[in-house]
Length: 240
Image 1 (cartoon, rainbow, N blue to C red):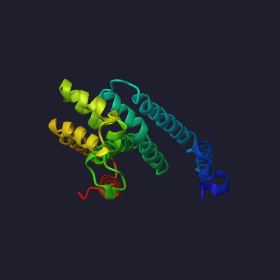
Image 2 (cartoon, rainbow, N blue to C red; image 1 turned 60 degrees about the vertical axis):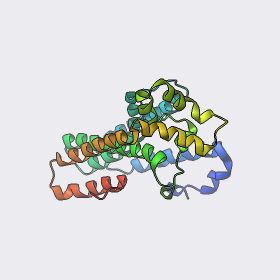
Image 3 (tube, one colour; image 1 turned 135 degrees about the vertical axis):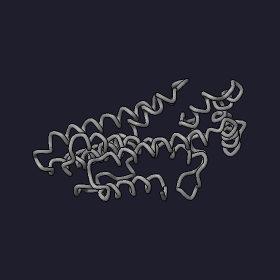
């Protein structure tokens, strides 16, 4: 059943793309209906946060689609895209919670930055797990490679590789002479040659550590920060 009491018979999964668009529109309306229930004093600020977040997510998704046909994407471009596509959603939710909780403006800013860094770490980890994870996580290994997606691993490898290896990265996904398994092995061999998994793990750790450090700067009792740290660790699948 859809949120806000919507009749799910009107949004049948059998409707394909049109039903998906209609369902998305309905869910957005439901979100605004829920926003209308917040205390009136907070409503203008929350609407600004929500509207900015929503537009940035759409912008990030458009960048992601544009990258499919773009011959070259830099790491800076990619990080900007995933900040918009992934991190700002988490940051918007965190900011809204901070505002409703009465946090001072400086703490709201730090909480938003915490969520941005955590979102970046999460997306980079998702990129890594797609090629080096475990199918028990619910995601087929190598999907990004087979699609030829410009992930952090692919972009970083392109920036480190020599021309012959760059050619492998550019052409393997569309090579009809190779099976899917052979394509994954070929691309991962290039990744391994240039130590791309370790470089990705380093970037994940940098972002995750920055996120936790921002929580330590909040002007609140440490016991109130503990649940957020636990949430961050659970999101990243970490125990410490």
